[in-house]
Length: 67
Image 1: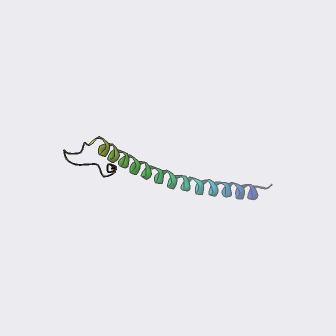
Image 2: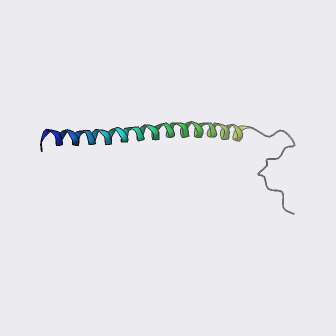
Image 3: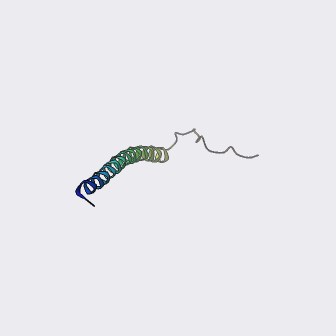
């Protein structure tokens, strides 16, 4: 293997690693965005769960009494 072939192989490896790093960065940003969305949703669910209905109100998912 001469120097030109060696350099070509190194350039190909570098290009592959650079592409892989770019894809990983995109995936990490997407995961970060999804994590923020899930945290907000969890906070909303916790708030909804801990909030108590006002007197006379029935929860929407409560089943009506059977006869």
